[in-house]
Image 1 (cartoon, rainbow, N blue to C red):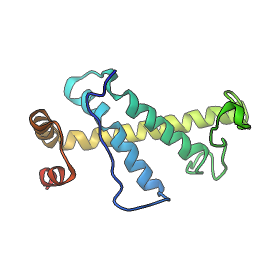
Image 2 (cartoon, rainbow, N blue to C red):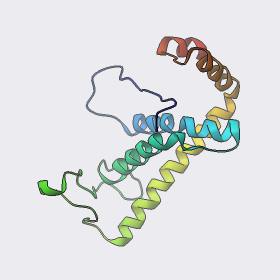
Image 3 (cartoon, rainbow, N blue to C red):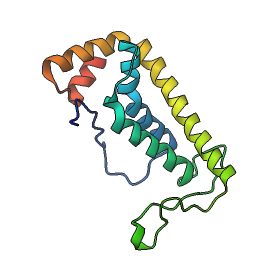
Image 4 (spheres, helix red, strand yellow):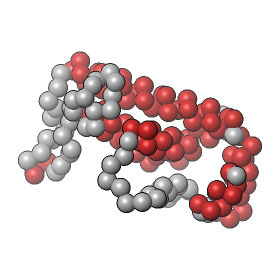
Length: 153
């Protein structure tokens, strides 16, 4: 399947570290297209598949590797995944209990649902801008940073 559209987030500077707030902002961007479909069409498509995968990966890392979960605390629960034959953990290998696995799942769901609500609120409040942007994209197919900034001003 080909991409019918995507959002590319360009860094504004070279960075190795990101704050929890910055990661949550990225999560909101990843969910934007899916939520826009819900609001405009009252239905969803398969178009957001990659964004949803990236959003899920992001929140999993926040919870299991970066210690960014209020519920689970400062610990890490998964090592970064490596190839099966390189000595890293394989599929299904984990170093935590089933109760912790359920907590991880619940925390991931909570973060995704909170982001979904934030994005819904923003896009409903800015629906007129969303529709203007959609018309620009239909006409030009690409909107760069300068054009988007001008539109939002």
